[in-house]
Amino acid sequence: MLASLSIKNYALINNLHVNFGEGFTIITGETGAGKSILLGALGLVLGKRADLSSLKDKDEKCVIEADFLIKKYNLADFFDENDLDFEKNTIIRREILPSGKSRAFINDTPVTLDILSSLGNRLIDIHSQHQTLQLTENDFQFQVIDAMAGNENLLEVYKTKFIEYQKVQSALKKLLDFQSEANKEYDYNSFLLKELREANLTDGMLEDLESKYEQLSNVEDIKEKISYSTQVLGEEQIGVLAALTELKNTLQKLSSYGNNYDEIFKRVNSVLIELDDTYGEIQQIEENLEANPGLLEEVNAKLQIIYNLQKKHNALDINELLKVKAELEEKVSVTENLDNDIQTKYAKLSKLENELKESALEIHQRRNKVIPLLKTSLENTLAELGMPNATFLIELTQTDTFFQNGRDKLTFLFSANKGTKYGEIRKVASGGELSRIMLSIKSLLAKYMNLPTIMFDEIDTGVSGEISNKMGEIMQQMSNKMQVFSITHLPQIAAKGTFHFKVYKEDEKDTTSTKIKQLTEDERIMELAEMLGGKNITDSALAHAKQLLN
Image 1 (cartoon, rainbow, N blue to C red):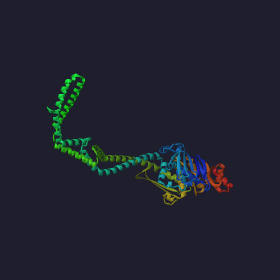
Image 2: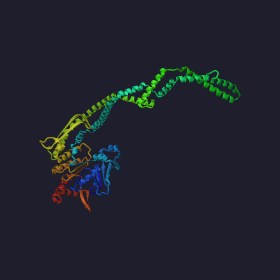
Image 3: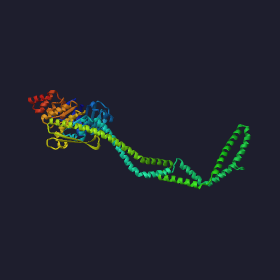
Image 4: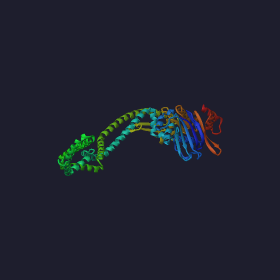
């Protein structure tokens, strides 16, 4: 509920603070006194757009602050989602600076106007004779039926599955689109992959092949140099090994003369052993070395394949070719496995579709069950409000399409008089009729939902005394479950309020200011008497005012 409202430097208001209570609050005042200003300020704090014309003093900032008691509204999730501190007493503040900039705060945390507006819609429902568009909206009409049918939990389950259904549907479409594109590239990618696989590429392969190619293409030169090497090492007369063996034998005879001679002997002997081993390896190479034109051709062919692949894929080495091969394998694999993925998605979509159908059918059946009660309740209330011939035609048809709230198409038609055709409410109902229909619906909703604070702004315009008395009774009944405000010109409604506030203008030096005050019982009598008979209050008007209050 709205606990208090503070307004500073807005329109004709200098500085105003007012506290409100539970129940039914009446706001009255002469035309032009500033009731619309009060609503305008409240609208700003609830997230409406502002401009510099809102400032009374253009050099000072405008500050509007509203204190709400929100314990009953189940808004903790909203505060968590928007990273706000949840307080049972939540303070909303709006500031309009002389520069034209606007700032909004919820519990002293800066917020955007979208967040402020979203919260505001959950806190106050401001309804005037000209703001009946909601009544003609299909979503609102479903909201009324679902509240009566107790579909809240069913709709939550349905919406969760519907969101999942849309995600799977979207994922399936992406897979099908991808498959369409992938199939165009599949043959080419498969060909490229086949080439790379047939090359049997391994890390270091290119270096090995290039080394082999160099050996095979220079075999005669290698033979010549290897042969010379064996001669240098193994020739009996001048070979290095023979000379080194003779040197070793000589030094061995000296080794017993001291450690230094023995050390030299060992070093020469070590060199001899290593050189002899090297000689053996060179001999082995010489024995195995022969020209092999066939192998040379084979190595050259493999090299050409690798060079061509490098050029085709713009790769610097084997590693880059292996990366290309891995990427192609993934693309080809994805394309080959797409059918399985698509079938899996189709199966999941079918399962969700069946679950949604079951859920939507239960919602549909519960809606259908309460429609006669809705129709009767509205028609009875409207009869009490001076529309005895008003009737509704409410029909629910299941479609093949899933919507966010089920599969139903709703026809909500209205006729105000006998013999007139049914039509859409916005087309066939007058402004006064729309107001009474909305009041009837809101009063019905109050029995089934925990509605926010509601403010009726002169929806009683053009209504007769007896009907206004009934409208007042309906608002009074609603106030047993929620906070209700009524801005009214009718004493029959004003008399039914728990609290009564008067908006008035007061001249202060060279300026006029709008002010508001809560009326005492005696002041209420005078206000009602003035509303009944004008400025010249008569005894009969006073008596009538007292009678209304009693």
